Image (tube, rainbow over all chains, first blue to last red):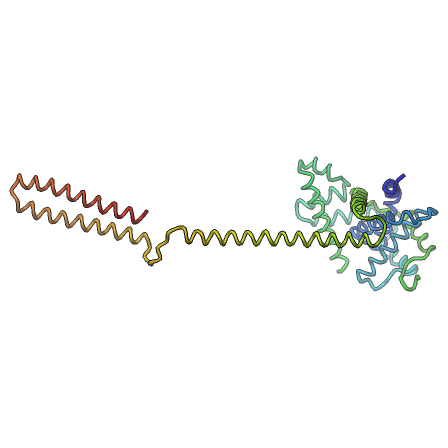
Length: 169
Length: 168
């Protein structure tokens, strides 16, 4: 198995976990996306030096370190340590009924998607809420796939800015 | 290391993994895997062009990319300069090749002036011909009338030719 195939398998197995860790640390969907990508790319570069004992822990270590570096560079005064980190995370959950993280994230995404102007609101909803790929969106909207891809990138940038504004507020 | 950089130690990491796995995971965007693999393949193809593995080859790649960008910027500047020069040359050519009258009198005024001259001359000829006809006998009047008509039309034609030459 070559490196690319190994990486592909790792992504299939661990992308949800790595992404969730990055999201949990940063509380920013799009920062988590970038950090997940960086984590897998770093893992790919260092695959040869990995001894192979605990792949999951190794990947998660890369992801958390990158997330913490991101928080530090974004100017967060409090760098998560054990006590503070887990306390803060539990305080953000308002009640036990709202412990379903996936649903919360999706609803929040939907809310932000609806704030975008047309056609980016529909494109963002299709990608992030309905989880459609660019080809499917292009087929449904009867548009050129390049056009749809450009719209996805723009929608992502707009959402990123919205998330950034909320965090700084 | 923990105090200095704020990274999690092994136990904290295991606790975090357990919490995320048990507390519900968040689905990443559907395009994430394709994006990552795309980056990997792009990096792999770039590293094939240079000597693999060492820092020097990575530096060479960065340097050659910078050089490429510089050359592209130079080409763009050169193209833009050539366009400006061509436009300026065309403007100078138009000024020299196309005859222009810089006397200050607009052409439309010249046309109007010529028209007025023609009209005045026509009126003058008609007045003169009337006077002459009043003085001459009838048959001579008719002959003279015809001759005068011819003369008037010749003169008018002449004036019209002059006017059309000026306006063309």
